Image 1 (cartoon, rainbow, N blue to C red):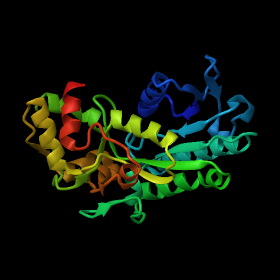
Image 2: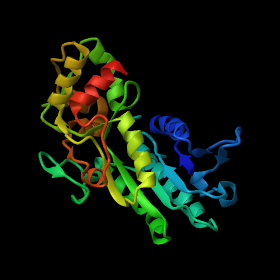
Image 3: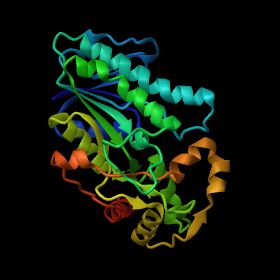
Length: 296
């Protein structure tokens, strides 16, 4: 397949480009600077600038662009960056795809399980209602920006990724050094549900969505969500380190501000659409994920 990827410099993007090329696909990447390599295409989402002629014939597009939600303390200005970095990139890419003489078959657009907000102990599927917090609103606007593509005959899969598990980078990657030192522990009460996915399964799932007739929201999480306490215990056991410390919720709120609602929130999300489509997980639960993290 000939695939264009946006957000290729991010954590998932870097790994996905290498994964797709390793699988034999031709991958173009969108860059916000002058082009340096034949596979690069310059664009400027802030002005809606992307020349369709530079894209040529495409089989698929993957949009992973978006500012990190945990990269900075939230204020009104950064909240605006979080939203616009998703909606502007999506709208710009969609407009360019629709302008092609031959439109690609599929657009896999990044999204997040933040769509559901804090669900407590409720099992959440792709049919669950929208949450009411800030990130749920961001996801709703983000996904809505793909609507013209679907209306134009492009199959759109909305990849609602959960808590990404990777040895470095991402939320768990930032915690791994503490766990390796025996300084890991639960956050808040520890009873909140976390829905994880390992990097290998994330990449395999994104490639799966490129080739299977799946559209609409798709939860990219492992088969069995676990409480924060269970995640902590699994990491400690896999690393053969104690993981008995506890970070009080109030301390997280002081340190992280409004963003603290994310690690303290509860999202018991299951990958119903992905499993119904026949996807096979390499790391189906937190125990398998923790063992992989410990040895990766």
